[in-house]
Length: 199
Image (tube, rainbow, N blue to C red; front, top):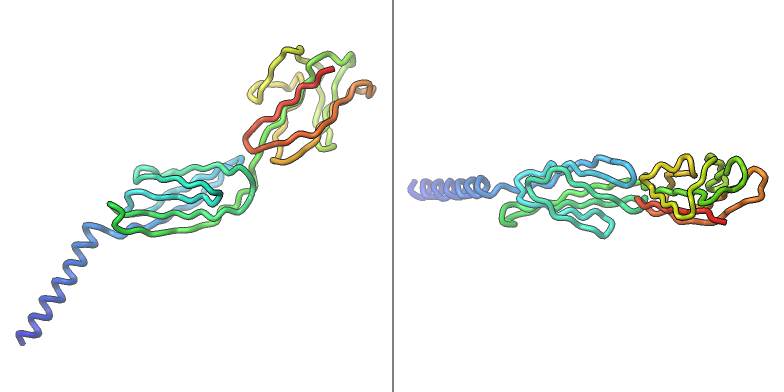
């Protein structure tokens, strides 16, 4: 009988210790969901539990560390693709850890292209084509020392176009064909490529 009571006390002590350990140092749980933005941006809704910090591997060679107060984790991808995101949640004082993984499917990276005339063509308008497609015309021009950027409204001087990253072509031509510009240009994600047409 004494042995049975002794075993019961030992088992109860072990269970109690595990309960105390679990209460003091609960298991970290990594959990997140993906919210897709525009132009290669995504946000992770961090739903991890019992964590002190999380390490996020974005699947494109970049990693970031966040803490328990960080619930919205953002990242921007530089090109389209499928990325394996991995989150490791660390318990207090790195006592335990837990990993969660999910795939991100990014297909909306974009960049900007701005092209404008830097001198009068002598004709009423200047027609613009991008990748062989007519995209509009301008009836005014900038002076040779005029500067534009992608935050400037160039609609009266030229064309601003949002494009997928990669190599593209532009062509600008007057109605008579007397003045013509044509060349390749490269678009990168979230950058602006500017071309100034001069004589």
